[in-house]
Image (cartoon, rainbow, N blue to C red):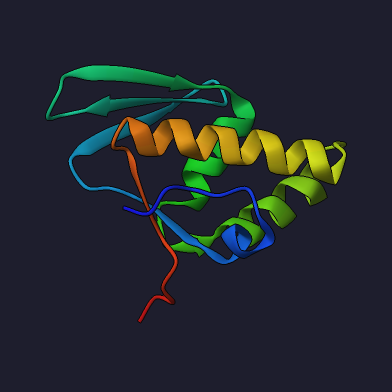
Amino acid sequence: MTPLKTNLLALHAVVVATQGQISSNLAGEAVILDLASGVYYGLNEVGAKIWHLIQQPCTIQTIQQSLLQEYDVEPEICTQDLLQLLQELQAAGLINISHETPA
């Protein structure tokens, strides 16, 4: 996996949830169980929205635009927070990030 960079090119990277986990929506939040490690992860409402979006491959820019339409947040803050969450999900092995265009 390529490390996530905070430049504009990173916004064109494609993100998708990895296989080997199950997730559930609980009162607007998401709970994810990594079946390989047995570790549970929790995401708040915004994280749950992102998790829902990345069940199919999509670009970071698509995720960002969806968040900006739904939430009252400055674009720079949105981008920083989004990239941070994606880095954490990638480090946990819950997502794949690719700089190649999906087939």
